[in-house]
Amino acid sequence: MADTRPIGVFDSGLGGLTVVKELISALPGEDIVYFGDTDRVPYGTKSNETIKKFAIEDENFLLSKNVKLIVAACGTVSSVAADTAKVLPVPFVEVVSHSCKSAVKVSNNKKIGVIGTSATINSGEHKRQILELCKEAEVFCQSCTLFVPLVESGLVSTDDIIVTETVKKYLTPIKEAEVDTLILGCTHYPLLSDAIRKFMGENVVLINAGVSTAAAVKDILVSGNMLNTKEKGDISCFVSDITPSFSAASSMLLGSPTEEIRVEKVDINSL
Ligand code: DGL
Picture 1 (cartoon, rainbow, N blue to C red):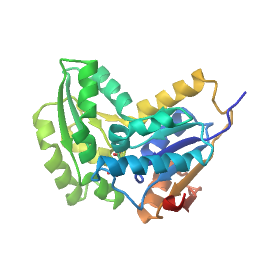
Picture 2: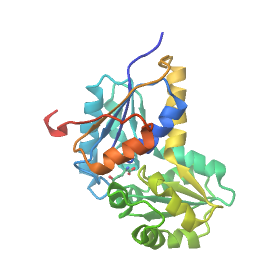
Picture 3: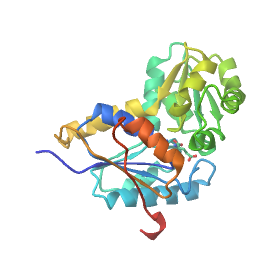
């Protein structure tokens, strides 16, 4: 029997839409409820205590929508607040472990770069997991604090000098380390992948967490007999503030030329 409940996905803002895009491609029949905490973004500069509090509120919002599984489509929550999922009544999927597995698999020289928010990099979670998978790996980590504000402001073009200079500033040490694989440890970063690829060069593999995370979600739904058998799933987006960049990103990543994605505002503090 089909499980018609939606998949719940959340992030601090629009970055998690890069994961939704991969979920739609891997699981086209699933309904998805997305929550972007656009009023409180960024999370990555906040304390672990605050990030955990926000994660619990976001998870509770999705549970109120009767979801069958929750995806923390946020590197920051996945790195410092994954333990908030222990009490959830539904399966939980985070984005760190799957990216680390993919990176170790594709890297030839075992020099792996990781970029993320300050909270993500300070947690050391990627480095710990990569070394657990491959103890001879060398891991080069860099927090890129200005990347999330750039993306949330719609600044992603490779023609924009602010973008190219910011990418250069953060990624120079990673490039000098001669990594052959770079984990985009924040779900906002795939929106900067053109600029990152241009700077790092075509030979460096960029790991987009959405791809392996969507495969992990599919495995759970298949093995738990929880797939939806619909032909085409519905996407509902909720945000704590309706911002022009969220609307633009949702249309760009998820919409079709004829179809606007509907976005609804919710008061996360009143739930
Ligand atoms: N997309 C979030 C992440 O993956 C951005 C965090 C933030 O809001 O700083 O880490």
